[in-house]
Image 1 (cartoon, rainbow, N blue to C red):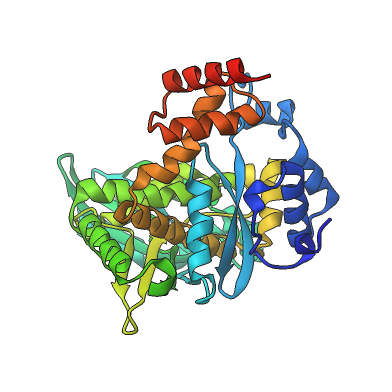
Image 2 (cartoon, rainbow, N blue to C red):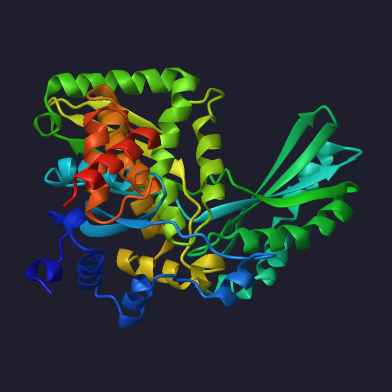
Length: 429
């Protein structure tokens, strides 16, 4: 193993050029992985059939998604290597390149509002909604006791019931009373915990108020679990003031036009969802919460904000809810997710969320810079060309050569790749 592989830095020049086995060596050395985790990463199929059969219904097979490592990431003063699970070309490279350009400026700085989740209980048919609201609020201590009794383990770990909100909501079905129970779920994402509490509490709320309980379920708009990340990119590191100003204009477009914002935020989620998936967390919950948060002002907007600093550099921030965990669900039982979490060396769900937010900001920087300069297709399609080469049957060194030629021809499609492959093979000795 090289000296570079044993050094504790996320700066690994040429990482993408190394054979897979050597990449695993680097990652294992960086994170001081246990041998069981290293072996798991090296397995051709890294989930046991019986385990997969117990994770979902009617399981027939598994589908492998490539996991890449984003290098150059420095988050809150600590170098990290970030596993990202995605099938989309250029996502991992964009994060690593973006992080490299702000690495010397200190990387990413983060904060988090907490680890609280919300469960909602819907009450219908109330004879006096205003009075019912007060009845529920007056019983907060009793509600706390009922909720905490549902999960003594969570309470023993410092979590549990924290607060109560009761909202009157006018709808076409009539006025509804919506009770929010606020629960600190600590290092769990918390869906099972808060759902169990809502199910248990609902009959009591109905009995106290004379209403009828209907839905009892968590909210994925986890706005009590908001994570923020910020970073500064020196103007000289990103190509100068013209590039900086073009990126600011790109951000203003996204923040003021929902058609652009949808794609702008999708690019952010390319990075975020890749880390969430790699760590066994719920991508759908995180995505729905992020998009709902982007529309919280009544208009769908950018999840990021960008500005020029007093010294002329480019500063970016991201703010979004991130309900992720280190325990429970697939995080606990999927061996590859556990191995990839070991690479991150995180000690809490908050630590993981901070890294995820930083990745989202890096991804957004990379996408905006590409769009504002050479266009998104150049880098993306260069990588996609390799997929096209595989699709037409290229093997070994043929893959890179077919990809190079179709990119040079600006004809990145299977028809062109098939012609190039045939020519290549005819010319072979």
